Image (cartoon, rainbow, N blue to C red; front, side, top):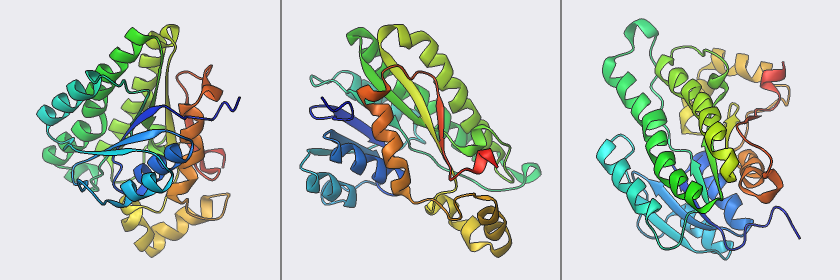
Length: 253
């Protein structure tokens, strides 16, 4: 048997429209999983991620949900937790970032980032994870960050939220590991996505970041795919409560 085979599994990937979320969905589909993609602006039909999943021979469903809207998140959670076909894998990846020095970081930006990156993640995990606990099986994967370990610069809300994700991963794993529900997180390094565009376009910051990465390059979204499949698979059945860095060696520097 191939412990990485996800054939017959149903995976929900939030933030699936582009970047890391799209790469995660594509990797899971190639491993055999059917995909429900969630994003605030995901096309009903014909999206890039849908084409990726269809090309892998798997089914795809698109759901629009705005994680900045607590009511929409609760409705999504209720929908997914109550379906006849249960969710086997929940990839809690949706996120947003706002950049400003701490002394200028507005309440509105703080509230938005905490809602999207932490509160919504808990609401979804609570509902879908609760159904997994009842069945006695399931995989939950959060997208953490290097800023789950470090303070960052000009992103106090994002750092607080991603540090919270690391703690939430441990808390849920402590409770749900005895029921064969694996809760883990991936901490991507500096990946070339929309969220890091401002850094890559800053000649000084961009150069200093690249200089510190032992791998000598910014990551590609596809670099996150293997870790996603691993944590979603039976190969990781005894992995609980970990935050797995995929960072080109950044944290080891």
